[in-house]
Amino acid sequence: MKNKTKLPNVYLGVILALMYVPILLVILYSFNESKISSVWAGFSLKWYEELFRDKAMFQALGNTLFLGVVSSLSAGVIGTLGAYGMSKVNFRSKGAVEYLSTLPIMIPEIILGMVFMAFFSLIGIPFGMGALILAHTAFCIPYVFMLVKARLVGMDKTLSEAALDLGASPVRVFFDITLPLTMPAIVSGMLLAFAMSIDDVIISVFVTGPEVNTLPIKIYTQLKTGVTPEINALCTLLFLATLLLCGLAAWLGRGPKKTKKDVTAK
Image 1 (spheres, rainbow, N blue to C red):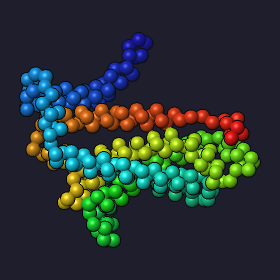
Image 2 (cartoon, rainbow, N blue to C red; image 1 turned 90 degrees about the horizontal axis):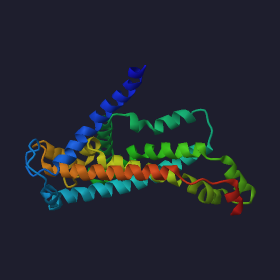
Image 3 (cartoon, rainbow, N blue to C red; image 1 turned 180 degrees about the horizontal axis):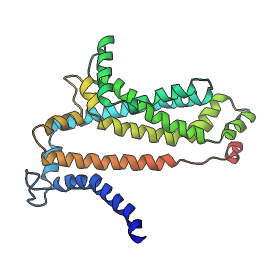
Image 4 (cartoon, one colour; image 1 turned 90 degrees about the vertical axis):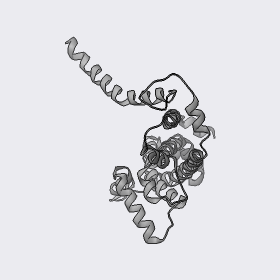
């Protein structure tokens, strides 16, 4: 019996090792003195210094951050309005519409990239930052939509009914009751969308222009000539930033709780 109870722990340990040991090695070798990643020559911060002196890398980082912020904000607005609108209607094909709204998550990125490229070419949208924003917004909307929809489903409907009974208009109910209660899910979805946007390579390759370079694309092109400690340093910083965003999204996802007493107090 004791041997059987250890099997899940062994399995979990193997899975965690396969997932995180490569990441830990990348972090470790970002502090390597040697330019050869496979040879440890001592502790050094020179590759972080080289990284911060790379103007092209920081220009790509600026493009990536701008793209992530704009696309996540746009996805936040569209996804929230879509989830709220779907919660207020009831028709036979509602389930199919909700399924189609989350379809971009399940479609392989290479197919999405080809579709965006063909569509933008067909309607005459030039490749570049504008096309990147449209494409990233499109595949980021489902992340916000799903989280806000789940929040609305779990929300106490009597809170809105109590506010309406007290004379509040539907618009005021939305801004005073619904929006504050769903804001943690909105922010959490936007943070997740931002993380997905700054991580994307495949879709960006299909719709970017010659003058616009994002950080994931630049890293991908540099990896063709070999992994350098500078790339390890950059990956370490991106990994830490991703952990911070995921932790913030999880913390905000808990959200505040409102009761009827809070509503009537207003």
